[in-house]
Amino acid sequence: MSNKTKCGFVAILGAPNAGKSTLVNLLVGAKVSIVSPKVQTTRSRVRGIVMAGNTQIILVDVPGIFKPKRRLDRAMIAAAWTESNDADIRLLLIDARKGIDSDTSMIIENLRKNKKESILVFNKIDLIEKEKLLPLINQLKDIEIFTQIFFISSKTGENVKDLLNYLSSQMPSGPYLFNEDNLSDLPIRLFAAEVTREKLYLYLRQELPYSLTVETTRWTETETKEIKIEQTIYVEREGQKAIIIGEKGSMLKKIGASSRNELSHLLKRTVHLFLFVKVKENWLNDPERYQEWGLDFNA
Image 1 (cartoon, helix red, strand yellow):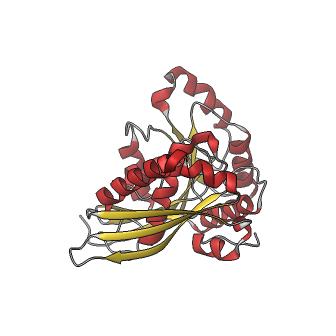
Image 2 (cartoon, one colour):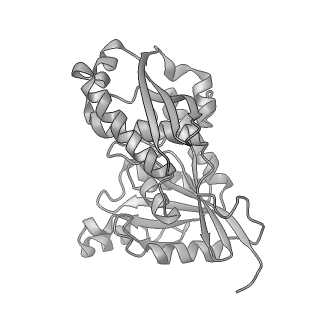
Image 3 (spheres, helix red, strand yellow):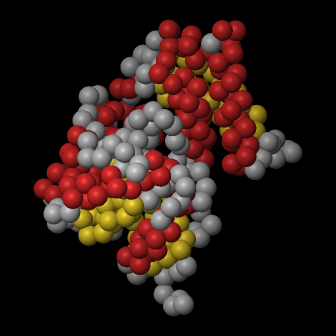
């Protein structure tokens, strides 16, 4: 094997819930991006770092691209396209069950308009009959921007190794940009807040809209190397606060226990987690929040 190193960026584009975060976590081999059944879970740009021989692949899990309705939507989509333009490879991930929906069509049209070559990856093929894949191929076979097509399952790992080998082969020569043992560039305090936000989505399902966020307000380590974390969950209305807390605090206890257990597992340390819920009207229009996520408030 050559000692010459290679390093490059792969921007993973797709409609909400195409499975981008699941794919990044699988390729990295560890959880670096949160996952939930809700669409539009990813808000900020998350970089997952993969080592493949002498090659470092930096996977950029960007927010799903869809028709924006709010300031946050516009900021997320602007960030996704910026990361796409700067990447060495653009990977369009499509949920094979949904096919070419309106969001995916919008992404393809943008790529065509800007003449951005990309690789096409159909995901979740474990959930669809194989003969139904042919019509999807026929829909896109004449689109000149797609240089390669892969069919994978982020859940089972089917054909993912082939995809990884291809990405590795396409990376440009250059020095590593991160230490070889790094898994992500996401600050640990922000990552911990994201884990708790994931649990909120999983437990609350359709009961609460997307008008909540989590902030790690305090992080201390004890003499015995245990970690004490305080986090604040911000919502926009009192009614939302009541839903999160639940009857006699039952829902907040469930969310806290689930987040604490996962953080203890991921950090390989005993974690003591303390959650607080506060009403903060119009937090979605707070420029500092966008700066923390790496988003452009004025997008």
